[in-house]
Length: 151
Image (cartoon, rainbow, N blue to C red):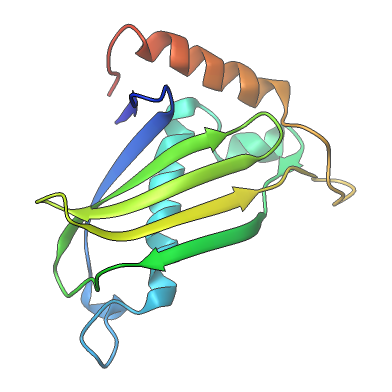
């Protein structure tokens, strides 16, 4: 589900359970697996906007992650149920998405940010600005959601 938060940002939530194969010898989720959790929430956000990875390629743009920042506040454990929230902060020149991982009680376990830059699929060179299709779809989502949540 996608919604607008109080700051007029598009937000998607991904419910998940921490699987056994993500647990390390200390009995907690290995730090590298968190990027997979962020990706799952990011994909839900982009799908809801109508601009997923397939559509990116069709518009001639790749979106490599060029920067990340993660703050691990509390460890995630086996079978723990969490919600990963992806919040679209920027989209006109680059994609900046903030993530929060919370449990059912609202306790924050992780905060993170990824930055993705538009790269021409043929030349593999950085391009200035997002494709108009992405900008239009984000703006359309914001207008539609201003009238109420969409599933």
